[in-house]
Image 1 (tube, one colour):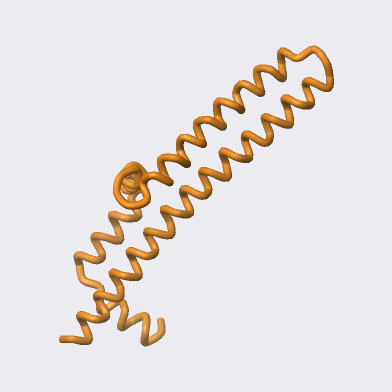
Image 2 (tube, one colour; image 1 turned 90 degrees about the vertical axis):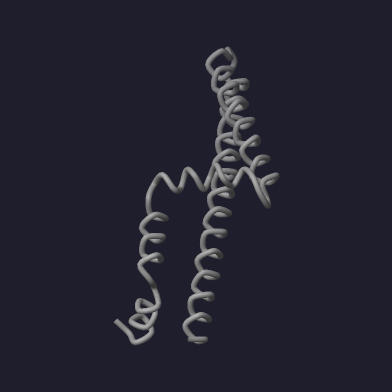
Length: 122
């Protein structure tokens, strides 16, 4: 372990350890995901989940129509639509999760900056 790592570990208090352990808990992920639907940037998060549900509906409709189609051209069209709808909803979920991850990293960096500033002022 380097000197920086040891100094950084020394700066973390018991409260920080509890916070880190809590943030690794799976329940906190769901709280954070639901909490992101209110507050700053909530409009984009809500809009992304509305888009996900719309594309899931399109996906199920396309799959149903794929099996109901009698001609090969119709089956190909519905299969292509199902693939595109599935890809779109996956992309929207990835965007949402990367945004959650980005905000979590920003929070941690700011928290670390405050701890370093506090330790320098002591």
